[in-house]
Length: 99
Image (tube, rainbow, N blue to C red; front, side):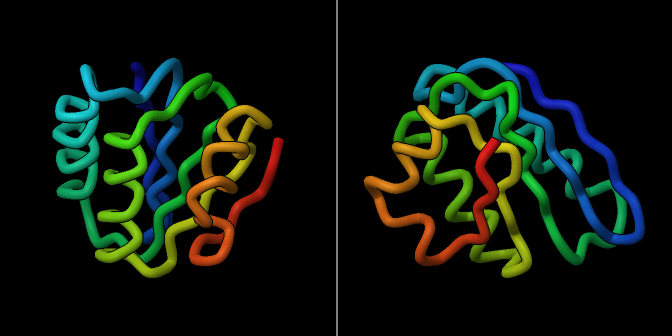
């Protein structure tokens, strides 16, 4: 799991790469928390173009971000990852743009 980020005008964009699963979710969440401390955040964009797998632990991270930052969106979501979001109903509560 790799996470890069940019912060511009209150918009934090997180670029997730690899797999977000139960083995690395805790570390990923710590990294994200560190990025959140870099300035005033008004919205979060998760760019998932390079995410190949997400497990329930990863979904939990997204739910927590959405609760804290209502302007959270998912962009460039690959089909396999989108299928998971669709199964759990995320498209009803999050702005999701497919790849």
